[in-house]
Length: 91
Image (cartoon, rainbow, N blue to C red; front, side):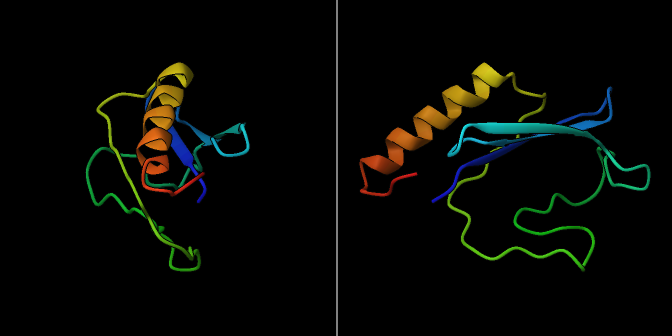
């Protein structure tokens, strides 16, 4: 089980990806031709470009109306980790 969080800043046009399992993160500008408007589909476990793909299962997803801080992301991760550990699923 791997925990990953992604945060997007509409104002700064940046994306942050957090690998919570391995305690790593990175930030990158959104591509000029990328999809970052508020309208349209939200793809979970998929990509708007058919050339991209993902293998695996999605155990939890959450969408917030604002970008969460690193501390808030860590709080959500701790809560989900506790929830799954009670069910013998570890990250």
